[in-house]
Image 1 (tube, rainbow, N blue to C red):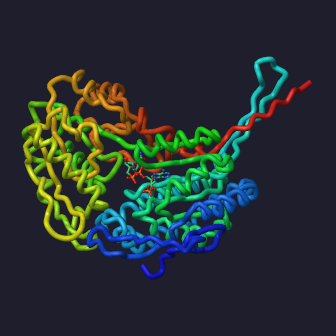
Image 2 (image 1 turned 60 degrees about the horizontal axis):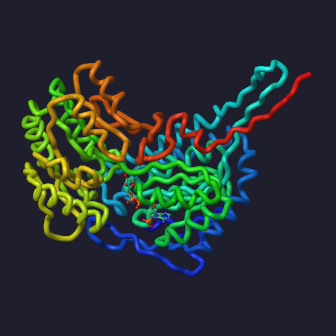
Image 3 (image 1 turned 30 degrees about the horizontal axis):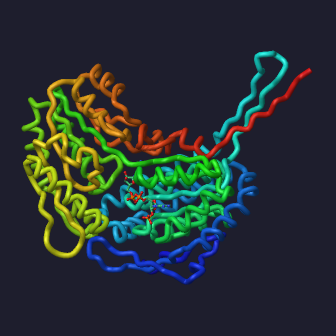
Length: 479
Ligand code: NAP
């Protein structure tokens, strides 16, 4: 950890918070403090805003090829330093090293993808219906952006926003989650090394999110907010963005249904469930939250899932052979404990897990609950932990109605061997993404995002770049 920067990154320089404040970062596997980083206040937010605003005009004029090559170099550096970045991420967030390496690869791919997209920003030309007037369309960067990221994917949530912002020619201020600031600071150092001009990316680590972000959103100089986090905070930030009519992209919470039909291949369904539930210890917006399993296969599915979940090794992410690291903090773990206790009180049976281990660290065991009652709190709360809750159904219409009976709509999973049914059910699910016989949908080349209260806009894919671009239309009469 010795080489990782711990100061704010503003205008291309590493600086302390103007009031000298710092905040601790701890390792959720041990509770030990691993670093102190600068804790920015409102004054630092202003400095970062000034740097981003000053850099915007020149950055917008750089050749797309230059922006593309910076991203490509950063991609290569990240890949070269996979091990170092994975250790940093595991130390501040807890995920096992193998998963952290997977996230580094995923995070790097956003830079590779957007380095390829940066040189394919297209405008247009057209003859208007009157036959005389011409329309010229160009794409321009939206302007200085505020990027706010959560702690669960400390590197990838950053690159998923920074990649398209750089490709589009936007400058930005990144505010990472206070639990996991080190990965973002390491990323800023890599981008500087890759040749990113001063002021294009500024990173403010802070424990005072409201004090730092609200003036930026209300001030009128930041033109875009890209937020990933909970729906409640997203709602608050949307309200703050309304005043200066800031453009927003919102990647919010989920409550994913995982539907297993009677004609599903149960091997595929259990494999899919392990990924959809256990990726990132269940601390993912895409995590399967509600398992709806046809009553004719529910017992078999539950038995096999419990067997696989029970065989997972829980421990510090740095230890060899560990599959499941600690949860992010005690608050996160207490929420999981409460949700399980509530489900059990309402009649759920615990097939495996369900008991918090003694000792240091925020560990919680992989848990499978069956016979979960529909009015259990975990049916309408993101569990954000390694708990699979199984309910049964008998009829296709019924399960679609129940799956859609939630304010969220990020992702759903459908397991069936019938193509007809897979398409029919997917089309009726009110979600932005569907995994058909797979528990993994995330891919930098695909548009990631949700409907209903899971968000606005998409990240990744070609459309991920559109979120950072505006159209300008020129009217040209031809006589
Ligand atoms: P969170 O509490 O909403 O925090 C997310 C980020 O917002 C953090 O950096 C947080 O900083 C900041 N924040 C909180 N209040 C703020 C305010 N008033 N002004 C400005 N920033 C503020 O969410 P989380 O617990 O970190 O992350 C888990 C949530 O993220 C889950 O709901 C999950 O589903 C969602 N998520 C969604 C996606 C997606 O793509 N849809 C991906 C990953 C995660 P502080 O902690 O300092 O408040």
